Structures are given as C-alpha cells and as structure tokens.
Length: 73
Image (cartoon, rainbow, N blue to C red; front, side):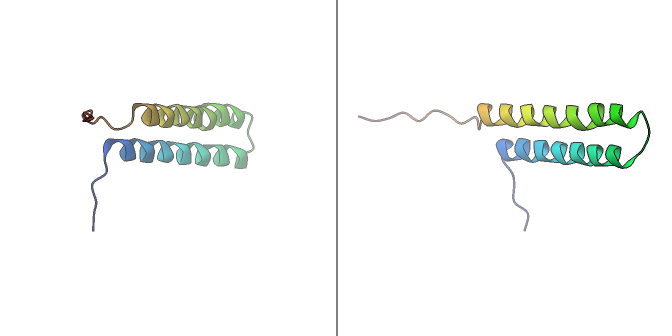
C-alpha cells in the first residue's frame, strides 16, 4: 500500500537522501588513495551533508502550510 507524503515529509526524506549520498561520497573518498581524494571528500561529502542539514532545518522551520484555525472564545 502506497501512502501520499505531505510536503514536510517529502522534504525531510529528500534531505535524508542527500545526507546518505554525502556519506557515501566521504566513504568512497576515504577508500581511494589519491591526492585528489581529499578534494572529493570536501566537495562531494562535506558540502552535500551541510546543504542537506540546512535543507532539513528550512523544511522544519517552514513546516506544513495550513490555514490558521480561528479560536472561539
């Protein structure tokens, strides 16, 4: 059974995928013994993880856009 994700869940899932790709990039750069692997470690891994974290924070801050509920007194 497939469920529909709302916008917040979709953004959180996208940021998690970006973090996993960044971690895979850092792992791959640690396994390669070449002088440019450190550049790959910084550019691919660390930058992608930082971008994913900011994307996650923006998703949490923005939240779900719902209509405001009027309180009855």
